[in-house]
Image (cartoon, rainbow, N blue to C red; front, top):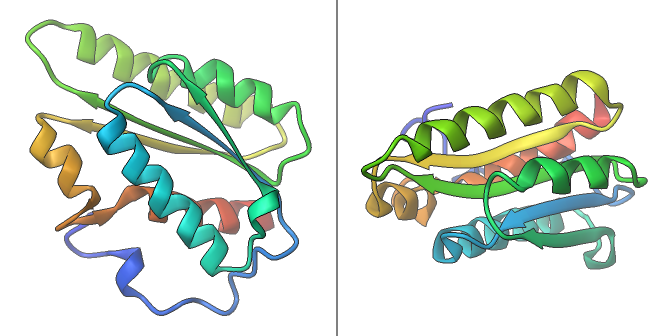
Length: 157
């Protein structure tokens, strides 16, 4: 969804999105932590705004975005209503960006196709740090908040 058109944090709380009886796993990458910490903050605050109890939000960190696949897989083995992955990959001078983005996308897609627990894709893939900051609480909103809304909706699916 285009962030310019849809900023979930600008919308009033949706009373139908009740997460009060839900438990969430969040896997967050440590790499680009200025960005991922902001995504995590937006995600957690949105879950809580919709009734999730702090003790029902379980956060684990992994070193980088590629490790999100393993972390998410481990969380799908637990009793969570949904798992959210949060990471940030910023294009550099080598093809590393392409390999990581493609690998994480395929890994999370496979988890969604083969597991009972929905895994929400919260990987920012940006050209530069400014774009990442704009999408992690800056002028274009917070993709972490959008992932929280998606998690609540998919848990009810």
